[in-house]
Amino acid sequence: MSAKTPTISDPVYTLVEVHEITCDLDQDIRHLLCSAFPHSASTFARTRAWNGSIARWTAMLTDPAGRVLAHVGVVDRRAVLDGAPVQLGGIQNVAVHPNLQGQRLGAMLMQRISDDLGTLPVDAGLLFCSMNRQKFYERFGWVAMPTPPLFTDETGKPAIMRPDTLAMWLGTGHPAPSQGQTLNLRGPDW
Image (tube, rainbow, N blue to C red; front, top):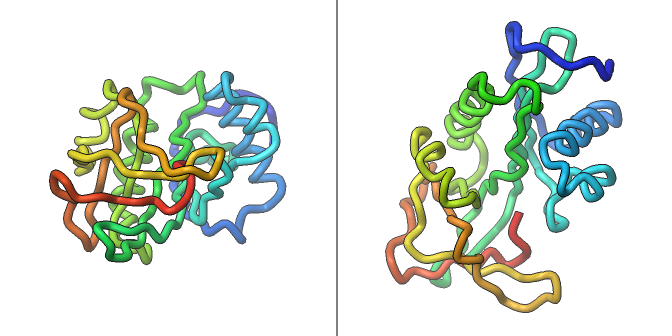
């Protein structure tokens, strides 16, 4: 695919499983992630996985020529909420091509994937964002979790989210955890 800057005319929404990602599409997505997250370009030059968590599903908007305009990955994770298993669709790497930001592509993509989470074999969606992004995600039905989840840090030890990071939940078959309930991701964050 061309390295030319994509345009937003008639974006096409696609949701695919990881085994449907071709080498060319993987490269295009990683190029978008490097452009959108230059501080993490050394990671995304090698992989789409964040903290070793690869997305099982990938949602994207492409232009009619197939160039990736916007991307979101969905990690499939079996977590534990107060001792009971819960299947999560973890939203990761929400990205819009830098030259197209501010044109509602991110909102369009988040609305579609938020709707589509209910069609995937998950009990809920979970995403992590900075505090200043809360209102953006609330527009699509996401709610802030009152208690931050536990995860496994890079050394393999249990850890809790940084205080400047917000965990947000979208129930597709499971209500949002209430104050005091413990969600353990049983692995790294995404």
